[in-house]
Image (cartoon, rainbow, N blue to C red; front, side, top):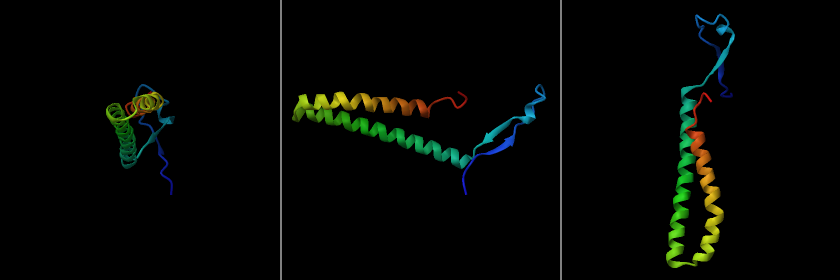
Length: 97
């Protein structure tokens, strides 16, 4: 059994005589709640990794070889920041756009 959204006729608007012919997908509330949970956990995981990278940078600055850590951060931070930005934009995007 698949969880495909079912198509139901849209409510007929009084001003639009052709509104009854348009179809709008109806999404199950349980499915939408699951999607929100997955999106939030994905974003939370990325933020957790970001905090770990920052903690690593602080540790490397105090006790380790800062030149090697700086090179590693120059590679990891832009990619991780881009992923967090894309995840945030996807999570908070307007569903109508």
